[in-house]
Image 1: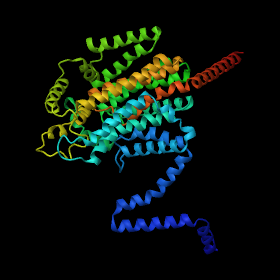
Image 2 (image 1 turned 180 degrees about the vertical axis):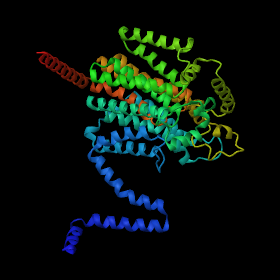
Image 3 (image 1 turned 135 degrees about the horizontal axis):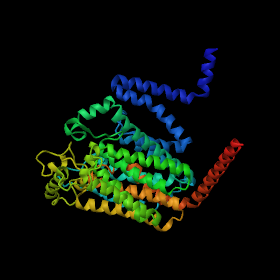
Length: 505
């Protein structure tokens, strides 16, 4: 009976049985002759095939997986056996492949906008950088691509994926909820770090490479970093998130959305202080100040201006809150004599002397691993860049940083134009303004720290700006969705009142 059952099964599923048997033999062969790593890769291949088929069946699952995985990639307690960028890149490519297969539902035309043009321009320049051999050490395509995919090509993936998959009000609201929930988790985790303690891996980071920048004042001041790579990345990213959700909250008409958005915004603003990142303060204020111009409403602009001015006055001209070390540290952002800021200026002046003879940069493939010690630009190849802009300036030169900034301003201008002139719905305009102001806030953060193109900020804020370009396509559906939610809220309110009246009788 068993023989008959197996024979019948093998006949009906012969191809699968043969394939699995061959994979089993290949895995054994690789384990014997190539070692455990290759053996493990062979073993997980069926799992990867299963996951791919599952994602093909439930395509939005790949999108939501991308959003969640991107946010958790830098957590110290999450150790991956592969490069950090691989999960993001694979999921983005899978989503683009699904969109190409399903041409009817892909709506590629939504991707053909000013942001796509700006990103394509930057990607084109970075592609030309493969020919840059300023250091005279030859062209290394692999090393070039490692940098190019992080500072250029991932922006293209993000732009197209968000323009394609955020295609309805329901998806938009769901995305804002997922983003907000992940931000609240980051806020919870930084609270946990402060009041409960660090995990073993987080402690290892603090006592090792993060000690000099995260343990200050003789060990009495800790800069907390939550699930991000470091405190600067966390502080600036969470400050920009606070900007976005505060704006979402004050412009939303639907009560449940308003409450959730404001809770996220206020929580993120609190977490910004815990990071002890001074640049985060400037990013937060710049984002809110930008909204004053995008609001198109004196009712919003006037109180926003008053609160903003009061906030700056308290930090810059008073000693309120000085009993808290984190607030004292944040207050030094207004100190023109701050030693840290002065040292950055000195470092950049030294860099200018080297970069004067390298207008195209030292090359995108040049770094710690392949820059000879006697090379003229070895200092520039090994000096730690203190900001995202400096990193791009070093590797692509004054020409590269000019092109990059032009592209960033162009895409931000396009988003602001849509918010200011195209969108009619006040609440949808609030979502667009929140994304634009958060992006501008993050862009300023890239001037002060190397955070703009890091995980999870790159996908969050470039993706948010890409959403702004989709909003005009879904505005009519959004208005209908909002009216439906308001009717439901009004009905629920009426039923509660009736229930309350009935209880009194």
